[in-house]
Amino acid sequence: MSRSYIKNKIVGYTKKETEKRDKTIANKRYRRLVKVRIAKRSEVLPLVREVSNVWTFDKDGKHYYPEMTKLEMRK
Image 1 (spheres, helix red, strand yellow):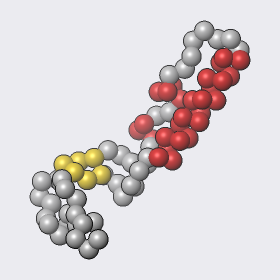
Image 2 (image 1 turned 180 degrees about the vertical axis):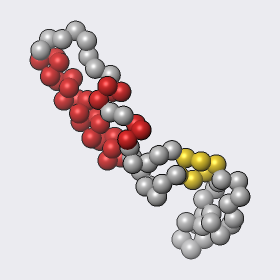
Image 3 (image 1 turned 90 degrees about the horizontal axis):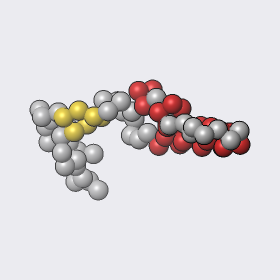
């Protein structure tokens, strides 16, 4: 695909492509904590935010970059 290019001028702050690994680890911790609380017959289940912090994930958001040239928009 020699002519592929990004369609919009929104780019990530870091070079990390995805947060899949971070989300997998966070959900694994969450599921484990839910199992433990169910086994202890706790009436309050945890929230996902109690187990993971999205600010510590590798990818750190996106940014609109209006001055991006055609050369920079190539993949």
